Length: 298
Ligand SMILES: Nc1nc2c(ncn2[C@@H]2O[C@H](COP(=O)(O)OP(=O)(O)OP(=O)(O)O)[C@@H](O)[C@H]2O)c(=O)[nH]1
Ligand SMILES: [Mg+2]
Image 1 (cartoon, rainbow, N blue to C red):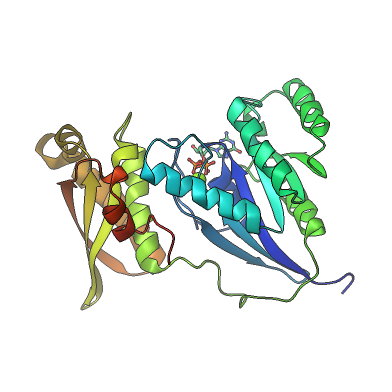
Image 2: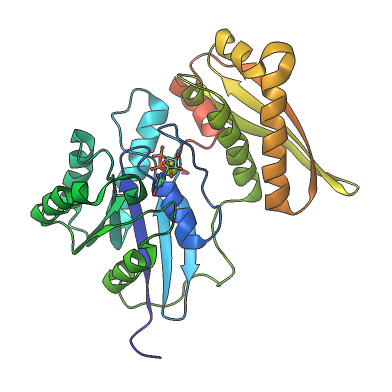
């Protein structure tokens, strides 16, 4: 084999909705992080480990950068800050359809301050005409922040191998930290609550997606199936009515699609019981946030 073995942490950062989690999943060839068209889908740091002959890349997916408006938002900002400080290499993701916005500039400022090796991914090129890319690539080169600016499509996989090789080239030499079959540090319980939240994000609109959290109350084996009980926390009674839907139709639809996702994850038949509970302003409640895992572990 030619060249040294490289390994390290690679932080994926950027505004909400630019395709960071899609990128993580495409690199890993597996659904590690949930994805939706709604901004602020990701709330945690999510590890995805890619092991190859020549390298081990520990990707860290992060929440989208935005001005926090409550304690949950502040937790998300803390996650981003910690990843920028800890990563060996950063991948800044920009939505090529939208171009460089003020919030993108904020992320770039953070990268500049952290003085980390960084690569830029100009994402969603499947949805833009080629001539639109040139000024963006020039603007990115002008920042002098990036060793490479790579136009990619995380969705179709276009140019993703090139982006990966550029990332790996910036990693330090190092050992293999994780067993090759370890792909993430999320527990099944965490992944299950995320899969339920993903289906809620896909099914609802406006403020409802942001006002939702999922708590796993029970997970047990019952004969040939896995029985799961979970509570959906929501901030207002009106939102609860929307989530449940007429005659319970909405909740039923969410439950069915979440169940099929969870069955794929566990490779088992699943029974899923969902409950909806109003917890006023849970996003501002430190105790509930801790209970839900939206707090740094002491
Ligand atoms: N056309 C196109 N859509 C994409 C691409 N990558 C991601 N998307 C879509 O963009 C939306 C947001 O994707 P996510 O991966 O959830 O974005 P994110 O940056 O992780 O968003 P947050 O977690 O909210 O910060 C989804 O609807 C994706 O399907 C791409 O390369 N092309
Ligand atoms: Mg995400």
